[in-house]
Image (cartoon, rainbow, N blue to C red; front, side):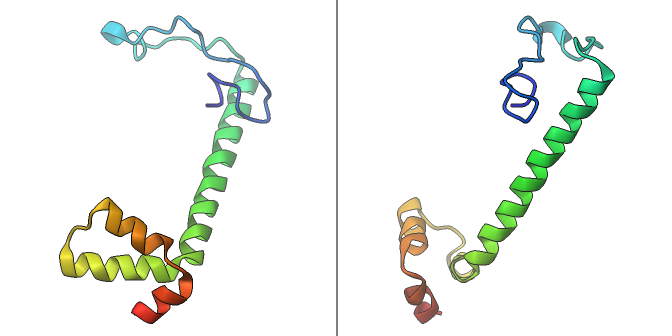
Length: 102
């Protein structure tokens, strides 16, 4: 995402070679980067920022939907599995209905 598609604050740069070979171990045989150590450090920072933001977003989403998660946990303890339609039904119901079901 960062090195191949330029999706970061580094800008729209492709920092990954288009001819990187993965066939017959070409990718893990010690291929050399085509950018400086400074750029590599910037890439590391960008990846860290993206992962940290996604981690915080996922924790926030779970906190905001705690009641639904708890209801799903209880249902899974009872039934072990649920189908996609049942899952969507639970997730899409209004928050008041979730609290009433508990």
